View (spheres, rainbow over the protein chains, first blue to last red):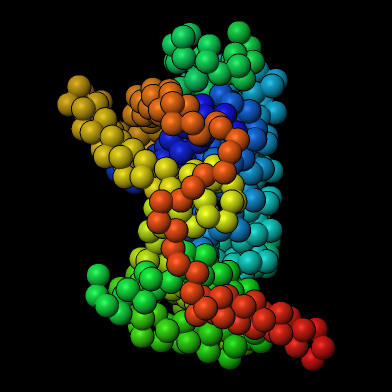
Length: 189
Length: 243
């Protein structure tokens, strides 16, 4: 691993964790804990993003317990898809970021639902589980409710993550983008 | 650090990771609901004995909302009408088992975090000749995380002082994310440049084995604990397959 990558990844992981603080301060009902993962993928490729995702989940597990570690698989999936989006110029404009965010949100939500049901029996973050309980009271079976709540939450969350990552990447100065070959492709420049 | 807390802190860094992995594996191997409940009790007692009462309490706090939600999701049935609510014994047993699994894993991992010493961990990795880069990533992140959090707080304060309004409904707060995140990312990239240069100058790209300054001692107790946990997991799997 090159020193540049080795220096970028811890900062991207710290960004994932710091965004959580910003989201809490703003009182938003979102996670946005994959912004660093998506930006790392867009700047340095999907491998850098996947490592960022795994390290993020490992460090979060050290702080809060390894119960959340299975969600590292979702981080890896998002990193790979963000890398693919970068190859296709997915961060070039707002509509492109929106479209890729929806695609990634749907796939990440599907994987989250599987992990939530098989590992956590449907109980994960408080907000998502509250929606799951609400849906079961409306007559859905528990697996159906877990799927709907995971998909809904991730669609919204990952769409905002991709819109935010796209806006930040487009705002970066040319001299910074020049150091990361993937960034130019991500912005189709 | 109290002398008892030192017991976990003195253990080889890898032993603590094996304990967490073993607890996670056993939580799903032992038959529910009695197995996970007994495992959680055992983990909590071991943590208390080794002077980690704080980790037990923190794990319980992390798990408390999950326990309540598990009981509501699996143990209580019916619609929105309070008269239609029913309580299922099987559901509550399943919720208790899942709650105990989460409790056992959270307690073991928070004991690990309380005893985790990044420099000892790096020395242990270097001594084994394992990937220094992977260990460095975890340790560098642990050091960077509080710094980024402080920076995020400073940016939030500065942007509010410049007139950024962060309280105008959900849409307004989402829009406020860009002026708050962009300086964080720019700072992240500047820091990555500086750090890359420093790492290069310290020979991190060199493909030679590193010499640890003070590797943690390899005690027989650590080896026995690691092998015992491994054997317990294998025996548990074999028992569940054959039973």
